[in-house]
Length: 118
Image 1 (cartoon, helix red, strand yellow):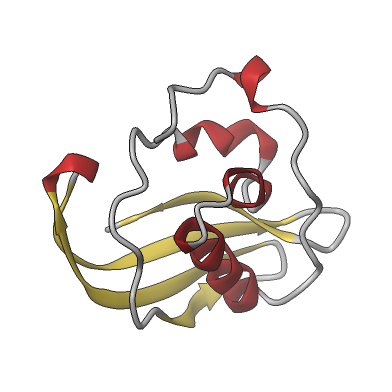
Image 2: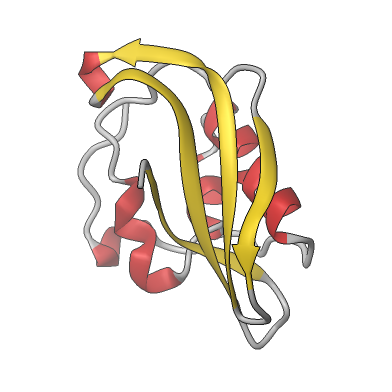
């Protein structure tokens, strides 16, 4: 279980590989499933890491499939589907997809700046 994070509590995070937006998104879901908090946070633009202030890990994302929905050179949207999640404790009731929004950093890495349903 995670406690609520403040920007000063996040601390150092690993550097993720330079890869496609879809590969970055799948890597993020894998880090969530592995309950790897530092790696999960590393997939986010630093200013948006507080979006991972989950109170609990909840169930894993099963059979996650992602595809590029739209994009340009610096911003993109990846659409991901997964087996239905019904866990009110994490705020997810009958959720089976997320759109993940990424931006390309100067380093060439794609980092997440938002996610959710619509």
